[in-house]
Image 1 (cartoon, rainbow, N blue to C red):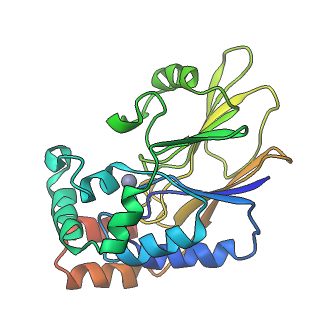
Image 2 (cartoon, protein in one colour):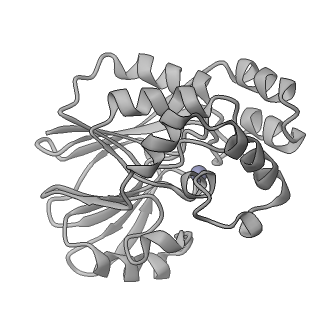
Length: 242
Ligand code: ZN
């Protein structure tokens, strides 16, 4: 099976369109959105409509939850909160319906998929250490758990002998005996100092995972945010990929 996994679009239509363009050469059997369709950028409704059209499964992210009023934004920083206030007031009925029908967790025989972590999907934990990752492997049984949330693409491997490793390369042949937690990175707001949109292609037959990076019209996305009076911190970070 050929899978495409996309995550953390955050209303960035320019980035999502560039990724769609890049994806047009791939004929996936199944496409998953790992959540955070909205929040931060200027086109939450347009992005939600595209995701509904292109994805077989849509998962919820913490920003999607906040946009539905299901998560208190007290834990958001002041910039994220301001963007969320705007998103909340500008969500269309269709987008609300799409976000409401999203799942917290998905699994098939090849992988588990969740926005943050599979132990407590609704707590939106950040997976930030190898030690933390070791515990997470206990919470799924398949070879791979795909995640988003941190906006940093990375593969964490656990060998059959219990050794863990962090892999940052973009094209990877998976070890037949190892298991993996794979962060696909973010389409709409990458934070690994590379401003290009990030998404993932997984070929379960070949055992390969590719993290693809795609240039997009960053200035176009920034201009729309400026026009809406979004915080300059959020506008600048797109260009810096942080
Ligand atoms: Zn996010």
